[in-house]
Image 1: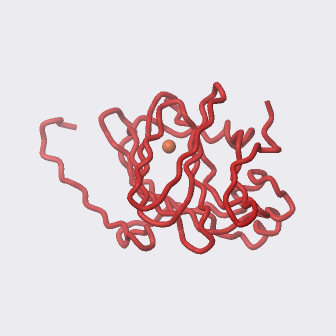
Image 2: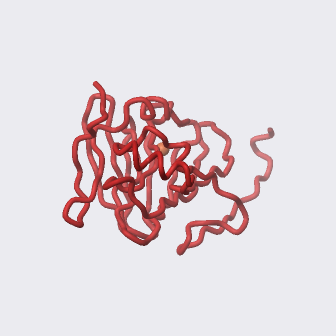
Length: 193
Ligand SMILES: [Fe+2]
């Protein structure tokens, strides 16, 4: 590609109400793709039979190279598996030391983060709040609203890549559950050292 040739700007619509776009389809993650990720396996199995939609997100097809910025919205639907709130799978970046920014457009939730050394952080997501996820930190969105989708707009370096494997096999050190009607961060009973 001629680097000095004109390149068109790209404009995409993302609804502030649904997070969805009229011009592009999101990727969907249903409960059947998340089996083993929640603490309550029994409830998880039932929800997997109905194949409940847990979250959607966009892959805009930006080239996976340095200098590019991958972006899109992520929509996590309200719901619980037992007392554990619906969440994204979460991931490290394949290029571990690459950051990401999430800007909350709608809903209420948490961004859960942890690095390989075991430092754990979480930050509240509410409309208007941006969370900068530092490089080296795995990240997962968790919807703690009873009835609203959690919608964020994200952007990260094009070459970052995704590493789901580590999280799929071990989970995060902390999970978020409802206790006395409010979200609580507790140790993940399934987390294996
Ligand atoms: Fe990411």
